[in-house]
Image (cartoon, rainbow, N blue to C red):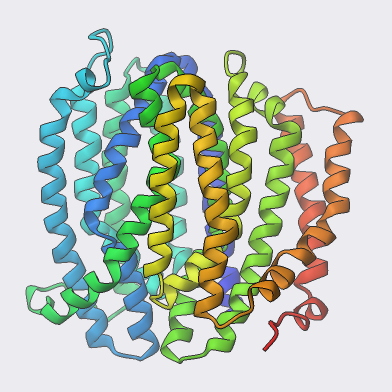
Length: 497
């Protein structure tokens, strides 16, 4: 199977998985809000936001595993692949034990820490189950890393699709029986174990020499893994601070009701970034293979193609959010969330800029050149946190959103392009001119058409809004494909030497 076929197979199933995930979120968010109350739903979001930080005890090992497996696979070194998998498994099992201890210490005090009254039951148990799911899931992510290194995102996403469908079904069943957030935590734990177990079995199909044994744990591989993974960790923490700490800041300084409102806008922008990442994440092992072959020309071409596609997708989503965001939120979750439309409009701008740099992130990770990029993200995240803390008291959720928008936009438009151009020996002006300008010019008429259509017909129901967005996407991306990704368009894909 050639590269184009592999990328299409992986990206199409990655996109299908993300579509199923987004559809599940679109359905479950209003369902849980109305079934549990807005405040209890905000509490559930808050638990996820806090416990999610425990995942960073993997120190970036999971992503490093995928990168190293892809690298040694390109060199046809099965022994090194086995060492990588077993060493990572040992490291993440130790991390899981640490998370279990942290969860045990946090769970009894969570309600008091965030000023939550005794009226909501089972908070300590729910927090512990969510944290323990992270602890058990950490070593299981090694097998997802192995599948990613072998470019079997199709298998990963088939599992994820079934897990998402199961999550929706089990959630509805348990909520209808009268259970609350404790049931949601139990479902999360059960599906984490089930999904990880299936990926473990699939690894034996993809990599037949796989042998899980203590003797394959290698000290040199530990150093190699951590040399790569520590920067993946810093990068992951930085992204988490930029887009998920907002809920914690609001939960501490304001109310869980505001967390719920903010999370609706934040979830929409996260869905957008997930959609763009769906066809980018499969590029990391491709870039790692090019790195093993020292093929800089293909790295440049991969960067240009991916950036054009990412930027074009971000422009479409931003057009929908800015022109129809308030209507989408009203149709989706009903009244009481009007402020979410303002937050969404603010967060749309960092969504565009961050999405446009998704390919940069994948290529730099594939080349193991993500150290300085991680530092850029870290500075952005800390600046974001400081601005949010300063602005949350006078401006509330609007101030928190502004903190994210200002810092992310500067990082994505200036700092990250300068770095990737330096690594790939590109001219910065050539990068902007080839990657962004053609997309802006080509999509401007399509954007005007989509925005203007609201004066002809504004969808009032969920189905009509879904049909409108689907038809708009078909028109937009069909035109983008014909302009940039047909044989004629691809012949013009090159940077100045």
